[in-house]
Length: 380
Image (cartoon, rainbow, N blue to C red):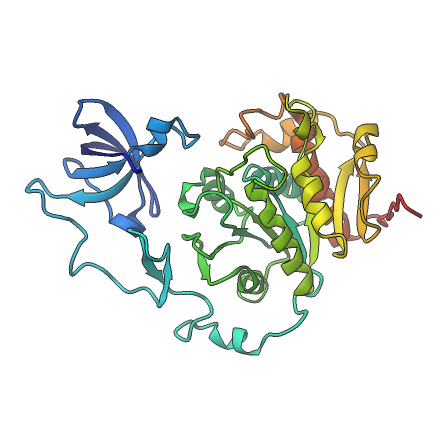
């Protein structure tokens, strides 16, 4: 059941196009922070009354300890952004049959200037473009920063066009991500796309397949990253985790002619045995795609090599020598958003973040052809 409360907007803490952070005084006189998505509820102003969803805070969920605005009311109690203010943006309804259903214009529909692309495209049309696939949101900034660092260090003037497709495995509103906002402002991301019921990307898509095609044909991407937004789910069971969506993403990237590059989830700091070394999440995903050619970039470490002994011969495993922590100090020195995953920083869990660097280094070497990649086949 959803927990609700009334409140009054005291001040606007942060005011961005797709997200507002509000200071709200609730009916119990508690002052708390609430997030408002103008795309859903309109833009809030001080002294307005709001109805907020307090479920996450009451359950102690990892949502930043904030409430979410679900409706805005005038001082007289009448709804704001209600009848007469609804605009039809397109014909595709996101979050269908929920109180937050809303329309967007998808890139595929007839009113889109790109409609003809999706009428004509068929088959393996991605042209071996690298599709980098991650399980958690923190992999996106670590990969993008690493790629940017490698290109700058090489003195390359033309940076690759990196597009981010946000999957449905975590947050549905893309606006929740501080990482995406900064990476775009720093030109490390060229474009953002959302599909299914995820929303807020610069390009909205009906499904994963058209999102991949839009990244290439609409945004002219050189590299595509597919990963969830903030927040993922796990149950401690073999298959009960949101990262199982990676199977579908790997298969889609391959079927459309892309090169799937899976970032493994690796840790030597996680106290849970199932996540020590290569997480059982990654190993489970790999077991479900034995016939799909993909690339896995892994640190040359005895435990990791042992965990990969039963992997498919169709998977290309590229081993990398461990990197000094000084690299990360150079990579993140001007990045304002903390890089944290599962509550751990780079210093706490260097192996986790190192594997984003290895994936970026593989892409860099492949794109610039600085070195010949040696396919290390453990089964020959």
